[in-house]
Length: 199
Image 1 (cartoon, rainbow, N blue to C red):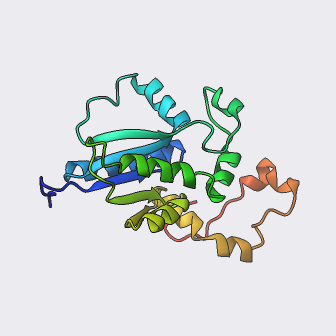
Image 2 (cartoon, one colour; image 1 turned 135 degrees about the vertical axis):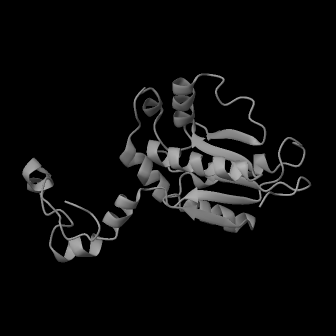
Image 3 (cartoon, rainbow, N blue to C red; image 1 turned 120 degrees about the vertical axis):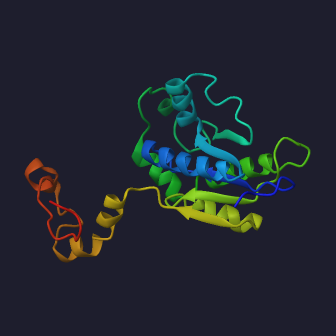
């Protein structure tokens, strides 16, 4: 069903700042855009630069009702040295900052900018679609009275694996007991009890 031309739903889509999550969210955002949504995709500035570097400086220009925004460097809680790398950021620290809601205030600031009525470029933000791992977006949506949806961007195989945490604990495989569990022999252990997943 297409959206009325008189009112465009403005969905802000924010994936976890990791490549496969960004790719999955971008595919979903494209489908919503095709159905008439105004889309704003949000990345960290680091990932935004990586995207431009891989696709070309003007690759994100000229898309009607589909735009990209970034949470600026330094507002994601990482030290300045982490922005100098051309490959990847400190995943552990980034995950910790996501869990500890470090990105909440920068995200709220961005939502305020996007909904600024003096800026007649975009319709006001209507809803937030976020990666399931970005729990701070729920808090942002509640504070602003916006509907939100969580999008689980991992593969079916990963999801089935996550559902096995209880079994891993029962079998004594999780949590890891000591550093000996980090050896190749242990890490190559076959887990053949997960229904629908071939060993």
